[in-house]
Image (cartoon, rainbow, N blue to C red; front, side, top):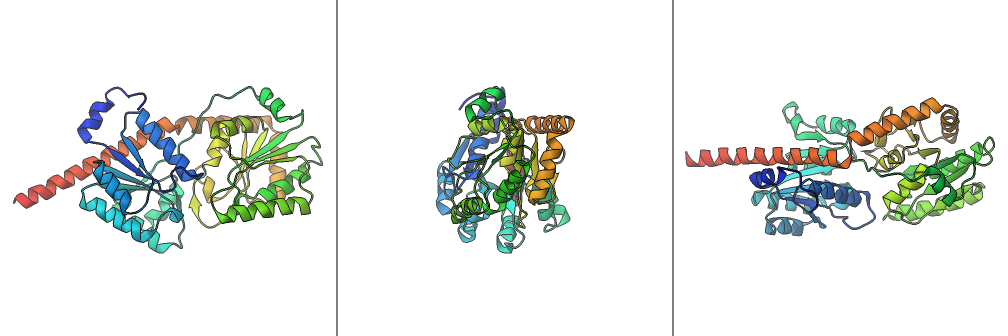
Length: 376
């Protein structure tokens, strides 16, 4: 199970902390799956006992109960769960005396039934940003506010290779380079980035643009790839652009992004609140990041340079500003580095362990009160 934090095994035995992490998309090319694996790995490194459960129905409850796990942690994203099956699963766990907590990875106000169930069905809810917490608190009574826990998404950290070596391997010359990383999805603004890049090439003829974007497991991803390739051809956007569509391990992506001068995430606001894992990968590359001012990046402030929207003109102006201001670039990298260190996966795992312990202790106190009342 890896490194055991001194003294933690005794603490774990005392609280009987055995966690079943429910991840319906486990093993797929999905951000929730990758997040859950990273969190579970760090929890085990700290001495936690975690079992990943790759299902979402009553069979998940059965596995948790059979393995005598004491806490079920649901990694929640709307498309991964059927609300009816989820309700039955949570009810089955409650009957067996298993505590439950849910992490809401995003929030869509219009999905009222899902939101109502999460709020009513889980005594404790984890979110990654203050903005998402505010959305939930608006729907809770004032005395229920302590049920919402803000724990940021963990940040990866890697030892970076020599930048010039990576640039040479990519065939980069002396000109600047800009990069993008993330699944191929319509809200990512890839076409707008390429349009901005074409404009930038007028002032920086040797500039190159690397787009590291594999397909997501949604039909919309395939449709958007077809649109991207069609528009690139129609608008003459291919010159100087390298589109890499293969899935790459995170560590390799970080090294490639480290070879860029600036990395950019020109997302659109699609009306739902979430948190970006991609921007954490960019920050791990220790290069300045430009991103749009949308809810996906509401948890970041001075760590990235924000533009109003993905209009190509906004991207062009931001890139020119950063390329011409070394002090600003250095400040962004420094503040991003501090954020990454503060919210490293080990630190985030510790916060989860502390919350798990609090939930189980609360459950123990409640059970004691019920037993005392029954005896009377």
